[in-house]
Length: 325
Image (cartoon, rainbow, N blue to C red; front, side, top):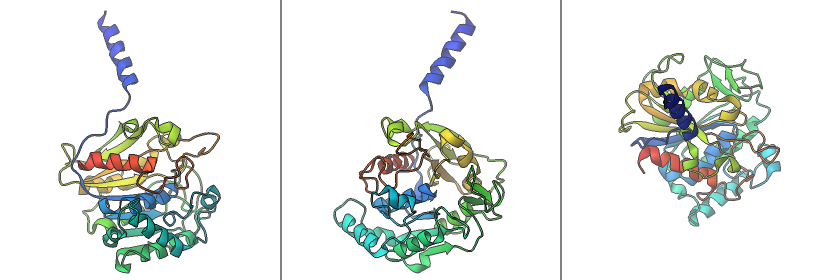
């Protein structure tokens, strides 16, 4: 075989092989955040695995199990949910071992955001979430920002649409850095962020099918992203881990890596040694998940909100790989 032939064969083999495995690391202090369906899912994860999480950032989300397995509740963004009932469900599930003990939530630091112009997940749903958290977490550890005239999007101070827009990529330049706000609230004082336009770390793809077999049949993509900043490349000892969940129609199949590159996390990761995990969803068309949302109402799995849930368990396995758990 000629050199050219060998080169083509190698290239073809690499293409078939797909993305590399998620690297094994020893990161610590796991936190999670999300936007829209990613925010609702982040709450499910935070409650289910509260013993392995230090805090959360929730942008346009709602209370734990507020959809109660109902697509109609999800479409209504859980407006008017009975927060007392949801808190009781949480306690009952903790007693049954379906989620971690609720006492583990007491140490969490939680940052919440709701745009005053958000028509998809209105401020009322986020106000209910604040009440839900108050049942488990001291008020001094909760921060709720709800005074910015923003629409339904990830707010940044350097990238995206006009602040009131409701359009792809659902990232809006609002003159406000939500990623920085939530990371600093969760972790405390951080070093000033790096240049958003020139990240020093590496955003790389990884194989999600290792963590959930046949992921596309369950609403998750074959490929996810992980951002590894300087100082965390060789094992990640002393680094933190943040899990960032995109919203509907922000997945790899729709926007490629736009959310992972431009949501605002990576610049803070560069200067503070924070590994950022960006798990990815996939659409299931025409139903039950045409917009590639996270399964926070049970479109794929009735156990979506407990530790046995497929998507939650897949994300936890990814986090375990990155923390050595």
